[in-house]
Length: 128
Image 1 (spheres, one colour):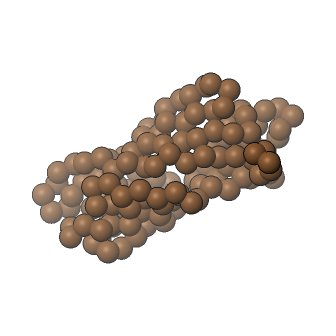
Image 2 (cartoon, helix red, strand yellow):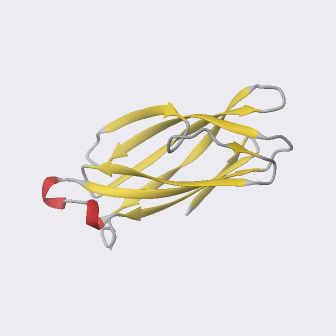
């Protein structure tokens, strides 16, 4: 698991290889990731957008952005957390993701970015 605090928001990430949804012979490797967002600020915040940078170990990279996460734009109160699970497909056995969330302070409506720490996605036993 990796964690990072920026702008008073802690982002923690766990990854899981999804062998049942992968097809190595066709260069399809599926990973799931669980993200926990914890608000250490004194104000409520709303997650408005996500922006991902996805890197495959073959040198390919792509960017993905969109509104909210898993179809919602959650409001997270001070001291509370929000958790969700999503997925990413790669063409190789290893890769990484990182990015940021655009949040809005619910008191003054100011927007700010919260960094998502870089995390690796690796097929088990690949690094042995």
